[in-house]
Image 1 (cartoon, rainbow, N blue to C red):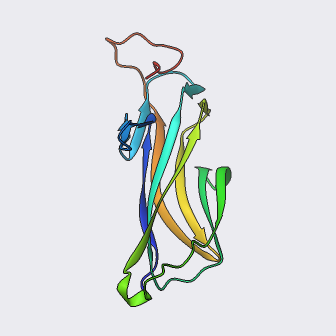
Image 2: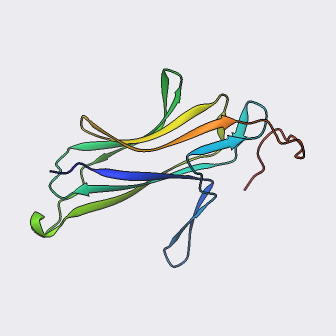
Length: 153
């Protein structure tokens, strides 16, 4: 049996379009470099997780969570708890997987120190990592004036 897997996107905003599409604005890579003094405040931080569950994977509940890791310390910043989805009406052999999209939004999001943000899904006792964003403070470039916080999107 395969295990659940997935990926998370870290971005500045998620927009719902009229036709049902989503637009992810300001998608961050693996590292977010902030060119300002500590602490910094992001106007908004959004996390969107795409999770794939094998049809034969059984669980009672799962948590979608965001954790901040600074050194050896971890702090849960947000989480949502979900029951197992209803099983599809088709026989399990006809359904390869079940897909879920989950999101979190933090407005504003304060950053006091360099850290790593970890997104994970916890199925009963099984933890699946979904993504990491390293946050670093960088010295402003000499030709760029220093601002107290990054500009709003």
